[in-house]
Amino acid sequence: MNMITKWATLIQVVIILLGLFVGAHFSKLSYDEHEKLGHSDLKGHKVMDHGSLDLSGDEKIPRILNLQVLEDPMSGWNIYVEVSNFNFAPEHASQPHRQGQGHAHLYINGNKIGRMYDNWFHIPEFIKDENEIRVTLNSNDHQTFTLGQQAIEKTITISTK
View (spheres, rainbow, N blue to C red):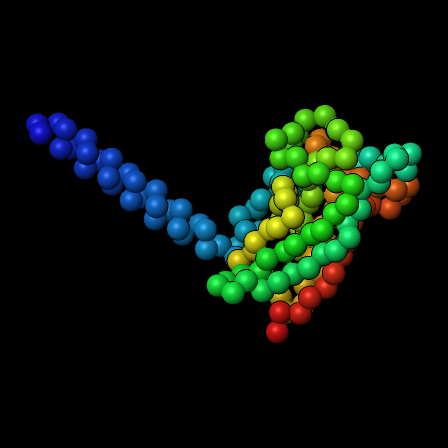
């Protein structure tokens, strides 16, 4: 190996290690720290409202049958949502509405945490002892499904004590 190849390899290794260090640091952020980053001030979780889509006239109305929060045996919590007349379609996210498909939005204590593209979502921790978990069903283009003025959603409150 010539000297230039050795230096190039060393630089690549340093860049990879630096990337791993930075990634590990930011993956440990709590939800409070996440909010301090100012994400909610950008076009982020809290401020995005894509409107609603009334499904009152549809033959098969999507429903949330069950919402559970289960402590993960290793760490954190697993959120499970059981649905009917609804197919998770991550491959069509941000595309036009298609009847009976889309994704869910997960909110914890009123803050949007992210999108659910299937029935399960893992979170590393809760920031409070008592937490309100809300899941809404949404179209591919992010509109909240409603029946009249009521969102198709399920809310539960859990204690993590």
